Image (cartoon, rainbow, N blue to C red):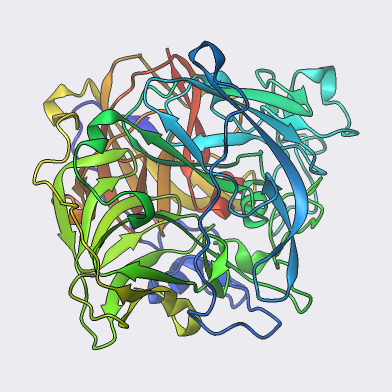
Length: 549
């Protein structure tokens, strides 16, 4: 990591130059990925017959009701617990859940109205809840060592700190930060640990958008999300409601995720410790990321949704650990429907952007309008993934079942509060390389050549400062900044791509690519994070601390 006010662009290293990981075949992962750059990760194959596509109806996540609205604060309660969920027809799959379902319950919040969510941990391991995209104080941001311990879990040393155990990777010999003398400073003296419950308070002082919440526990984020700890969180405001966009049953939240199942219907995941208690990490062949062969939307495999011949608003989240998608909506005669983008991670765009295909990386969200009015009644529209193969090319389908009146519209001006930051406004430029490399003689995923240490401050910025960050990748890395949204200035030295429009909090770096983003660090002072949202990369060191002072 470096701070370089006014320096010229550094030479971008090729994909093969900086990687230390070696695949089992003897090829570097750089060479392996460069042969198929659309994929970062290895795919698990389910061991039981999979259902045909477009038979299950699309489920809609249930909306959680507040337990209290007194004092101008909406208060909610969520219990994290293990249960069995029917995902594949006739099969009950054990999952870790928010409130007993996957996805967890949806939170509907109003801009400017604070909410408090009390999470109760009845799972067998500690948890942390992060509201992804939320503008929240550090105490409620879901820092990875701010654990909520379950009943019976042993106290951490002193009761006020948490320990970061290095993931097992080739050459580690089972050592962790408590046994390896070369790993110093890995205890986090700033961690705030509670037992059984924790209140997360969100001021909701941000633009109308769709956020999501998920587990963020140190070293175990990837398997916890895979087991089901994810849900949607909407922020609404009055301005959005006046635009005439499709609403009610014509606004569909779509959480896309991939999974794989064993022959008993249990979720497969290549964890070194299936209990997720002590030993982080995945088997060597999955170090680049874990992919499943079943595509779920709102927890259903390849579902079908019946629609009117009218406009629909699709609120899409890629909640996969590592899988990238390139979405297209295709009719039975091969015609692609327009995907009209009206919003990004952090809310509405200034004006609509038209796509025929749309790439979406893990943790990215897109707000789209699709018009089914030109599809005949009875017609089928498939939402497909151009980056998939076999069954993973299919995502879901829409069946047009009736003609209907439609008074919705897509206004030419969507929002007037999208910030306009100029390069000349920035007080400094920083550069961060996201690459595989060595962690004290071992292999991992690094930012600026260093693995994550919760006790180390990597970047310090002043509250209110505007900065340009130059992000450089070896392979695919979806990079997420906590607290702030940003705008994309450039890709590879050229203009941003069409889907880079608007205010984002996650940016998809493609293999060998450099991207420049600009943001104002406002909101709150304190400790936050930035990291790769390939969840396996995140668990294996690809995070850094950001101190806003």
